[in-house]
Amino acid sequence: MGREGENKGRNIEDRLERILFDQARIRECIAAMGTRITADYAGGDLTIVAVLQGGVLFLADLVREIRLPLRLDSIAVASYHGGTASSGTVTFQDARLPDVAGRDVLVLDDILDSGRTLSAIVNRIRDEGAPKSLRSAVLLSKQVERVVPIEADYHGFEIADEFVVGYGLDYRGEYRNLPVIGVLKDEWIHCEA
Ligand code: IMP
Ligand code: MG
Image (tube, rainbow, N blue to C red; front, top):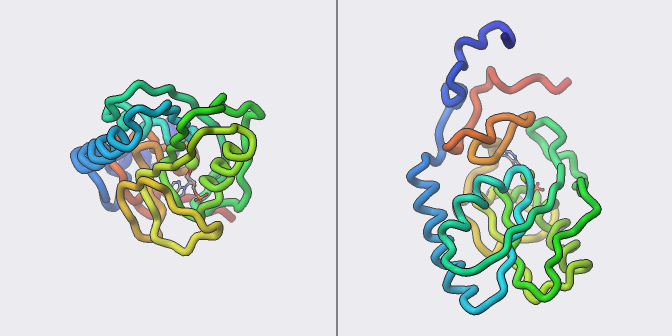
């Protein structure tokens, strides 16, 4: 069994210092976004492209709030490489790009921070995918100065510049399964030296 003191954090929600958004608030926010997307894309040829891994919970809940025929696809990238600060490079983990030629594409990610990830994906789909239209949606928008200037066309909550986990968002690959979004207690953040 894990390291010493693990018993203190047996329930992973106990590892949170603070909950920012509980399940009810997330559900309500995503329902509102789904309603807007349903209205905006009526009559379109919608393909939702989720950014893996972080966007999967958001994807699963959002698509059930969109009352239109649509297709699902995904794209896998890595930018954090384990810590709580972005590495500054966005790596596509698959040479394959979703087939979106002539489609109305909506790219979904969990969070917009520096803007590097979303802009790298949007640029690649625009340049290589020949979509009919291209927009983006994120559940969280960090209120920081973007390194790459980009804003999502749809965003759920605006948050301050702090590292959050849960609902798809990870720290060192974990916590994605938390049904809420919150801030980890310091004791669960490892020294990166
Ligand atoms: P950006 O490229 O800096 O905009 O960051 C976007 C990506 O970094 C997201 O897809 C997330 O995977 C990750 N990320 C950014 N902020 C956080 C955070 O607070 N918690 C966990 N992951 C984050
Ligand atoms: Mg991500």
